[in-house]
Amino acid sequence: MESALAQLVGTLDATRQAREALYVWFHQHPELSLQELQTASKIRSRLDALQLSHLQVGETGTVCVLDNGPGPVVAIRADIDGLPVQERSAKPYASTATQIDAVSGHEEHVAHACGHDFHIMGVLGALEAFAANRDCWRGTLVAVFQPAEEAYAGSRVMLANGVREAMPKPDVYLGQHVLPMLPAGFVGTRPGPFMSQAFSAHIEVWGKGTHGSMPEKGVDPILLASNIVTRLHTVVAREIEAKDTAVLTVGALHAGVKANVIPETAELRVNTRAYTREVSDKLRSAIIRIVRGECIAAGSPREPEITFYDEYPLTDNNPVITSRVRDAFDAYFDDEAMDLGRIPASEDFSIIPDALGVPYTYWGVGGFADWENAPGNHSPTFAPDLQPTLDRAAEAMIVAAAAWLVDEDGG
Image (cartoon, rainbow, N blue to C red; front, top):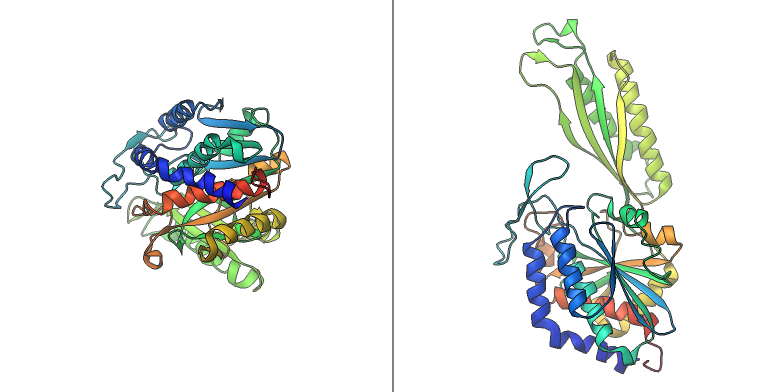
């Protein structure tokens, strides 16, 4: 197996220059969720150049099936969308792209401020290695290039557009994310809860408008919203058990336009994170109870409107699958394979394998040599070091997939 794995990974030496150039193209051409037309076209062109068959799933999703005879079926996934962020990384290849947002109609700066360009290249690098070395493995490698992870839509779009029919049912589903909290070149895994469950809430509350000098003639929705914010921030401290972990953030509060006018409405946006369904449900119930209760206490003339959206599932790594990948990482990466704590960010990675009834595991890849001072994902300055991140993303995918596709005799 060691010689077969060395042969697979050795392909990366010969392809490094071309892969770096292709990475720079993806980094400079990010696109918003469900608008990844150039990105999808570039991925498909690369698959064509490698003479690998592929299917379009939805407008911007792609599935490539590399069949190499009887054996396990391993799926590897990359998300492909960018973010409405103006890059300030100072990289010579920094994105200057802009795009009209299909929902708002506004022109937005766009950047790969979450590292999805590395995810694309990790899967493409692994595909190329397995395609070039069919003599040392058996089975089927499936590559899933998924749009719109940032909009919590891509997995569902692919399921609705026939991703089940586009590939044989995998035995295992694998994914990774470039992260700032482990050193460049390191890979980190953990069994069980890995990335948090999340949801957001849009809340609108009503008051009664009046002149700012006559507050007694109205109901102040700004004061009402402020009381809601204060009360919501007690939920984690006073309603969640100390052994559990949760986050509740009020990220926006909008109301009023003039200093001497008490407005009629206020709008809040709330985001939550948790590592169990029970805790997430408790946060949801608390939001509903507190908002309604404060509205009653304020004498609000209307029931509040609470809309939940962007509901991300828990990424809960299968222990058996994760152990197999971790053993492979330990054997290949040695001291650069490490345990990783829970990540408070969220992913839609698990939606497809859960829908297919397939076990999965998801791991992290370090992106910064100066990791202790690295910016977080979604920051305008988030642009991981080109190397060793690019090679390590491909190596990790190869090593993990080979744990199923390369047998102990090396083929």
